[in-house]
Amino acid sequence: MAVKFDEIGYWSEIKLDIIKEYASAYSTIMNKKSFRYYYIDGFAGAGVHVSKSTGEFVPGSPTNAFNVKPPFSGYHFIDLDGDKVDLLKEITSGSPNVDVYEGDCNRILLDKVLPAIQYKEYKRALCVLDPYGLHLDWDIISMAGQSKAIEVFLNFPLMDMNMNVLWNNPEKVEEDQIARMNIFWGDDTWRQVAYRKTPGLFDTIEEKTSNEAVAEAFRERLNKIAGFAYVPQPIPMRNTKGGIVYYLFFASPNKTGSKIVQHIFNKYKDR
Image (tube, rainbow, N blue to C red; front, side, top):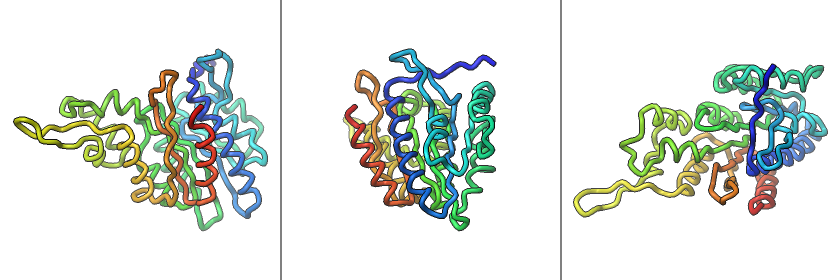
């Protein structure tokens, strides 16, 4: 087995710390209630990464969650890479409450994992959706929101959007890239948000709006369309030059969870 570990930047290490801190608080609270509660990671990776800044191994989201005390009732880890899946299975071997899946998380989450988290059955879940780019289906987000039982951390892949879709001249964007954006957003209403029409000298000019405007529109979409009751302002994850690589969103049916995450976001936002 030759696993190619993902090299992650400082911003990704911050993200892992944020999710780990919240997972611990979530498990502590849920452990006091009569729920069965689960940790779901749709883009789980190998369970360990390599830090770009130090070259050292960094525990990934699944490993961090697996070590949370008190433990979750169960874990669902998904990845497309068979070698990474094999390593994840090795890390979690001997634990009957861990399910590791190889394949497209969009299908596995929609068909197998999320339908099993039923509010009326006193089941709850914390779901991490951390795609490398526009590789997530809006139907996943919508199903989680409609369930009223699932809280979500979501990577809003701004870099992929700006590189491949949100160009200054939208007419030059390739159709397959537009299709990827439509699938992630859920429809094509992102066009109305990402561009504004202004009068030019001879004709109407279509101008690109700001990253902040696009992120805010998606935040409203998580609330009003997906149905999450609480969606605090996302935290921008920046590279070493200060540029925003992506936004980390949190969406929840629960006011308490939202307040805890806002506190954690505030603690990390200037690091």
